[in-house]
Length: 273
Figure 1 (spheres, helix red, strand yellow):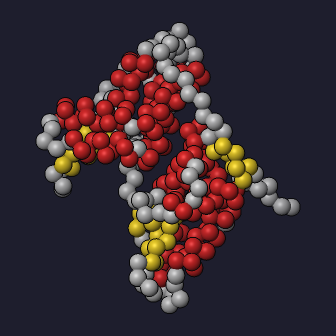
Figure 2 (figure 1 turned 90 degrees about the horizontal axis):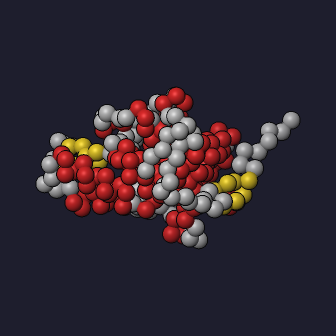
Figure 3 (figure 1 turned 180 degrees about the horizontal axis):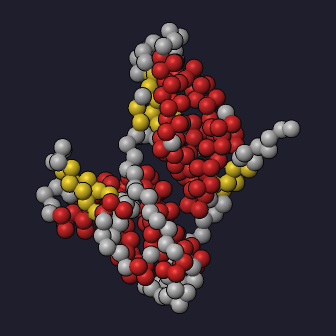
């Protein structure tokens, strides 16, 4: 079994409504500075190099209670971190030989330079501020265009991120989940659907029960002399199509709809009876 490594951020407490006054007003620079407190470099002694924590409570900086609204923004935005390959690449390219303060500054610049992650944060900032009647006159507004598809139209964009590969004829079939080894190149280019499929697969990895089911499927299939990628793909399909698998998929889609715009019609069919 081969899974992509996904950086996980800690859970954040949602602020009480009293933490932000309806008369509050902040600039984008002030809010960005508060978001920056959730981003830091982390020294990894086993490999003797810097890693980076993106939108994580583990950075441990003291936060201004008046800006508790940012916690809600970080908690929602961190679901997009797995897409932030540009941020991690930018950090890795310049982190060698830095001290803590310089590495922290690089981590924050790298985050804001990533077009997907910075857009996610700014989307959530505006949405959360509006919901809490907090002013930010220079915070940008974005429009997320809805992408309405049916279940069968979305499904291929999930399948490609739960991808079976047989490296040698008759050999073991490995399953690559939300990794760089995938079948996305075989599909029509559609960035919102691709992002949605990837983020759902990430949630599969984060769900212990789903991960266990995939591991069992992998072990059972590789105990069969007739194993093949086609056979594994059929079993993966059955898992996704199962009532539990479909419910998890639809729940994950709803959690990232604010970013992808993807809406699957009749995602969870009405039970018969």
